[in-house]
Length: 109
Image (cartoon, rainbow, N blue to C red; front, side, top):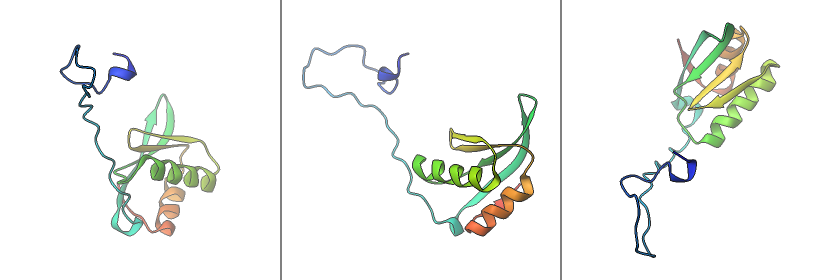
């Protein structure tokens, strides 16, 4: 399915020129304050390489990208943010947990 039709559910074709599709877009949640969030941080091996995965972030995609950028700069490594997770390359679990605690986040895992 192409991306332009991804959210259109149940309608194949309409002859009504004023018809609007129900796209079932989910509204993004507002970003909670760091003190109210408990992030799940664990070490995983993906594609044979050590990776730190940070899950359960509650907020907008922009806020997730900003936290990912700060983590990458603070640790001096690469990574990405997608599907509500932050992936950080390398075995820096303690450094990442310390960084998150300084920012006010609680961690588990």
